[in-house]
Length: 385
Image (cartoon, rainbow, N blue to C red; front, side, top):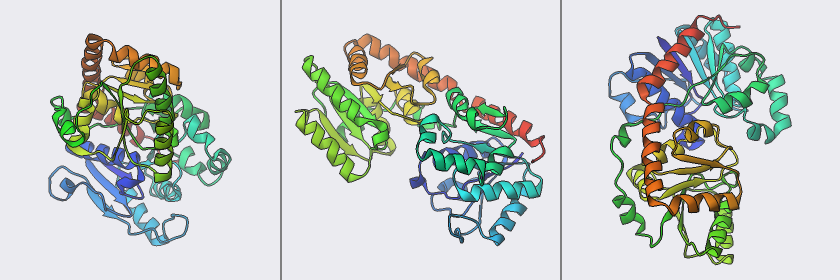
């Protein structure tokens, strides 16, 4: 099939949605499909796309020229021509104005389109500036959602929450593509130890964006509860965020007498990140909302048990493999769960092995790609409306 993906930007700094769309495009091309990546910039296009066979072709529309992140008339014309040559178009994300223009281009070209919501219709997300988003869905964004042949979600929980905003029952749930190649073997923790030193006690890892949505305060309260019980695990906070917020977290740590237990590591990437996952005894993320949350599979593929909340859309899929504990976003609940995992070495090891087996099965690239192929083939038979 000829599949066109539209994402206005290819800047990875825009978040995980860009990474997810790039990885899907790469996998589809490797499996023999003709994949077009239509965008306004190519700053973070994977290097292998420019040099290796069976990789997507980039079509540049040029920088967005109109206010509000909209395409110009000439760019819309280019998008319409590109859509007309595709069997199906895949539009990513909800709130970008040019996505609505892309949907209109598909309609004019007579090409059906699939829309990935990327968790943006989750209950928590729809509560943030909720009135503005509801007005958008009822007006300007209506044609984007109503005209899509398929609404693509990443998990049954996301599908359930998104459905209340959809005009018809056309949502499906398929997991994201996760590159399993770096996890062919369990990463070695030695690299992380070289980078950050060893820790005297067992360690709890948080690796994500340092943002209030992630509720790091809950982990700080958790550490305080555990300290009162005579337990002092190390808490490793990996990620970046606004310095003012990071400073407020450090102040809370210091005020509670937890300075020796907390280490803020900053951004950790590449092999060092995988080594850090393998080094940690447990991964804990008390998030308020997470769509797919690539950090969960990353941790579990490194045989590290996960503790998180129902705020993540894939909580059912995580829990079903036996390597994750799903609890309320409450410091006492996190303290109990962390202590339960850290105090039993045999249990923790078995959870880690179960987690890895489950992820390798659930996220098997060939099987996931087959699900996408079936979805695209069905979508391509439905006329654009």
